[in-house]
Length: 280
Image 1 (cartoon, rainbow, N blue to C red):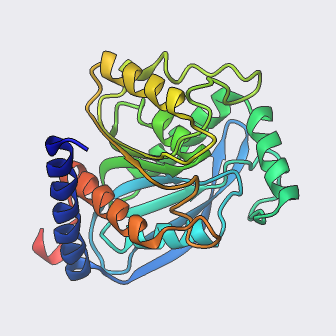
Image 2 (cartoon, rainbow, N blue to C red):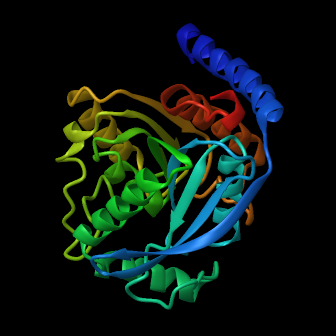
């Protein structure tokens, strides 16, 4: 590793440690419920997490893995909401499954989730995101400053959501299918072709031992974003796919803490923490 590389790594570690301290100081109680949003392709169960304290807060869309809204996704949503955000986590396969259906982390549901990923129309993924963004805009508790975050398939969906001009920041964890341009029915997505539409700041995080996004794929995405002059930071860690999922053998809790610090650095800067009503 070069001296510059060591300096950058140390700087990120120190920054992450400081941000973790800040996060502990501002963490708040949350409340949660569900809302069923009308999309062009049917009702979409959406899990909502927000601070319990009265106030107005920025909004986040949290896009899940192929397993829909599982326990790990809900726990991630609670962590995000506890830092002063209204978090909406939509069910991505509402066209195929009854509302409120999480999948199991087993081979049968893995196969089903991967099958649905390529059966759903690309336009439906986009209209789902737009519906949830519009819902956040209409909430009196929301400041109207919006961001997106996602893991696995959700990382790709967060990337596409960031193409909406009202998304000011996006975080993408090990986003699948981007380098192959294979998301959606027909396996012919245009995510990289539309990268110049992103106006917000992006945080791109990858695992170097992730077989789903090999080095050549990551290099293609990096080059495409750089050529389009997207405002982004890029981090590759010695980690496997799904290292943020807080159950299973691939989970890396120490690395997850570092990544959450970087996520909150991005969202705090670009969206700002909501103020209690008495301070407005």
